[in-house]
Image (cartoon, rainbow, N blue to C red):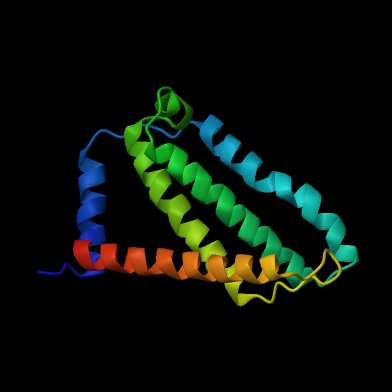
Length: 152
């Protein structure tokens, strides 16, 4: 039997309220924000020479990859990671929402025209990279669709 999303969410919220909650450590959030804001230093100068939307698209693609790496690292449950983020329950919640944000940013990167001519030569490898990027993006969406069907 499939659960309707609001019912599943309400069940999840009542479960959280009845359990003892740990608090999110601000060090973990600060590290994530730092990792995602550093690329702005590289992308902001390009807004003077290229279309601003194209630069934003490139930035969103970079942040998506950074967040995916952080999500993968959080999934390893490496020693000491609980101290950085404030407990395993906080890691699970942050892992989920960072993955959702990463997919959203990847979708925006794919949707916004990211053509920044003049940065390098258009070669065969550029086309291969674009094709693999699209295959990877649609593969991630397909994977999450299968998981959503399983859980709901």
